[in-house]
Image (cartoon, rainbow, N blue to C red; front, side):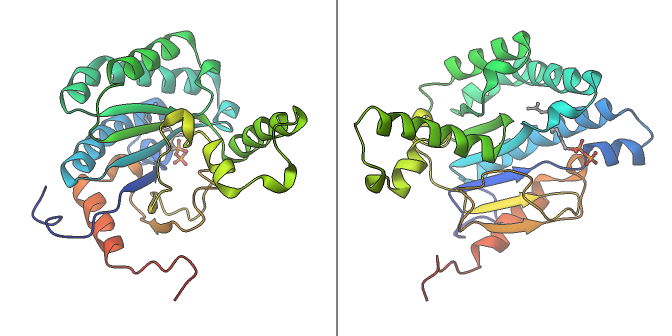
Length: 243
Ligand code: FPP
């Protein structure tokens, strides 16, 4: 734990919208893919700091269901970076007792990326340190729709009455639910690059999340800035609708 974090109120679950790789690339006169590569390097450092700080769950938005609209070259490049990240970091993550989980339908991503993901899931599946969730081919509305479809099937089979459906059942049917060990909702969602919106990220889970924004473009976002934002969050009082 770093000096700044010591004895402070560290949230359990921090989620991050890693925005601004493209603008960073433009600003620095390099290709968009070079921007994503710089973003991947920034992500690596944030994972390490989250672990040192004692955060239990870190969720990053790596690829949304809407990101397929980008050029084939950019989409392919992002998945190549994922393969590269797993190739270079998996041994270290495993050594640090990090458990990797995927939120989203990763079966639809390129085969090499599916293989890397499955290797990361399998290698780390008995680790109980930081849980690093990578949202991949993830969309919040799609996630809720899938949960509704699963619950509806139970109703249709006669196992459940509509009036018996609870919020907990919906939470359990999300990617963050039973299939991934039932994690708590994010306490804090950080978005970089000056944009202040959720962009279809964790729409059900964000009901009581604190939201924090910074103008830093994702590749420029440092572990120190991350830690400062997380600590600043710790001093806010969350009332969950009560007083
Ligand atoms: C948003 O920036 C970023 C993404 C859509 C991709 C995020 C990917 C990484 C951080 C690196 C790869 C890591 C993995 C695990 C695949 P943007 O391109 O929307 O930026 P812009 O709004 O400035 O164009």
